[in-house]
Length: 407
Ligand SMILES: Cc1cc2nc3c(=O)[nH]c(=O)nc-3n(C[C@H](O)[C@H](O)[C@H](O)COP(=O)(O)OP(=O)(O)OC[C@H]3O[C@@H](n4cnc5c(N)ncnc54)[C@H](O)[C@@H]3O)c2cc1C
Image 1 (cartoon, rainbow, N blue to C red):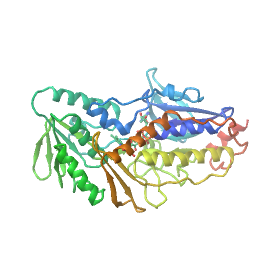
Image 2: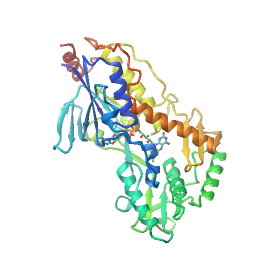
Image 3: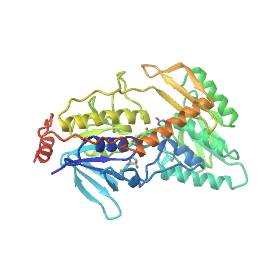
Image 4: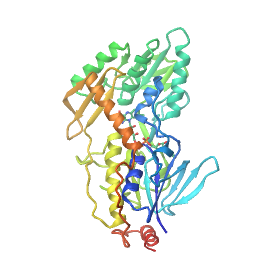
């Protein structure tokens, strides 16, 4: 019987890992299945552009995985049971359960309303493609009203900044406000903050700093200082959370649901489960948690591939880099900021701003899309066979899985 590897989520992290495993493990011994809710690869890093009215490329996952030997299951994961080693899914046919021997959990993240009243009912977000599309439809309606409508973006993290600048540039007829809890762009260097301020001025964005939002209503945003801002569309970008599935299944997770792993991305509670991308709580080489980002998806993914291949083939597991180097931020289609960080994750004093920074970001976006949509590029002719007695049979579940492979 083949060793069943199941990959949950085909975003930046999951698609990369699935492709790399298919590239390195022999199909004679392993069977790789990817489960994803959407039929396309969604470029999440461009969803604010989609919302503002631009088209974004979305390769079909059947094409992405064509010829790789990977099985694709388009379904929503509804539960994970790491004791029984099964995953439950829902799809058009009603769904069901299926088993795994090794699980790679890469379900990403979603918007977090932090319990602020009215956000779930009234606010838009850009955390997923359906919600970004809903925002776009709303902006289309507002643009056609013939009078200036108000769009309020709550949160001045990187997603809030990119969303506000993209919408203000693409839809100059709308009045755009950006609400920051503290000073605008606190994670940036002083120079980059000034650059950001100038960009907001140029694009006509009203910035409200030191402002805490207490509630969102259908047509207003209520702030702690008593201000009520008129809002024809409120866009909530103030935080991301992970799906509750890992915690519900009994995997050891942090307070906010991210899966706790060792240096190799292996769950500390269930050794035949690995986690990568936004879903994982991984400590970087600087001793600090890696942020949710595309870069972290790549670094954690690479480490997980090494670990899974190593455990299954009995080879030594290399420690790959786990670093946070900085942020590429677009400010619409003509401006950007490249802010590198130091070993502690603090902004370095120097930054790059303007078109050059935007061009670098464009290369990053294109590179991420290319890497994930060509997951087995450079496929080697010889692939690793599984070891008859893999190096770590620490758990009963691993041991039984490995017996099946050897049989
Ligand atoms: C608007 C926006 C802009 C961003 N810009 C940047 C940026 O410039 N730089 C940067 O580093 N990061 C950026 N990020 C963050 C970055 O997109 C994430 O860190 C990255 O996508 C994480 O990769 P992932 O593979 O963990 O998750 P994702 O890419 O979100 O992939 C998760 C996959 O799992 C699927 N899925 C989720 N739940 C289920 C389920 N229950 N069943 C089946 N499938 C499911 C999803 O459909 C998706 O395909 C941005 C995020 C947003 C929203």
